[in-house]
Image (cartoon, rainbow, N blue to C red):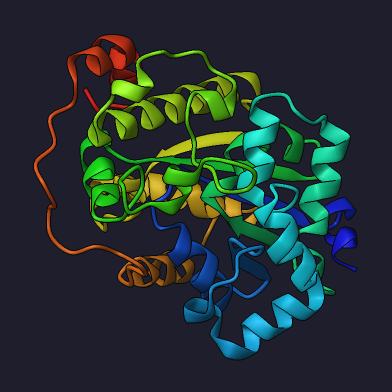
Length: 295
């Protein structure tokens, strides 16, 4: 049973969490192939026929159940995004959150590995809960707010074409102040850039708080440092890999990692539209920007 993975102290658990557009697809899909002993998944509760293929989609539906992956997720009663939003605004407690998390992964079946790695940007609201699992760690990824916003602008988040933004009910919701239990009357008047800037600030602030509260279990890295093959980022890439492996990586393993990041799954090409960070964002999150060296 998959529950044995999450409650088994002999299996290390590493959760890679971000705001999306930070190579979580790459890590979830390719880490296991590059490093024996690692079992890696990307957003395991999501139905994605393109990434899973027909066989993988059928297996996920059969194991987790079409009712849970379809109807309950649509009602906001299943799915990691719904879980994180409910947990962020205090709608459920830790015990219920962990039960929900495990139920969404029961289709994974029996897993034999040294380290379970889940790369999933939808876990933003349940990191403290996951850290209560035996031998668990969280790696939080941030990206420059300008390039992060540029990347999301190419998608449909917070646009009129984004059906989750337009509906905003039951299980069809994005991160908004209301949906995470934060009062901010400015939201309805924000542009798309401002909404994305707000989300970046919300996540960066929560990541900084998580690392301060759990310094032995939580590490925050910059996306740019983990995906740039240069001498300046070598120490950071090695430290990241050490968390995944549970030991210092050898030269061969470092080489395999560098080869891994040469593949950019789900990456967008080019710089994207020009983005100017709003003044209120610089004022509100200036210290965070400096803290993460994005000043």
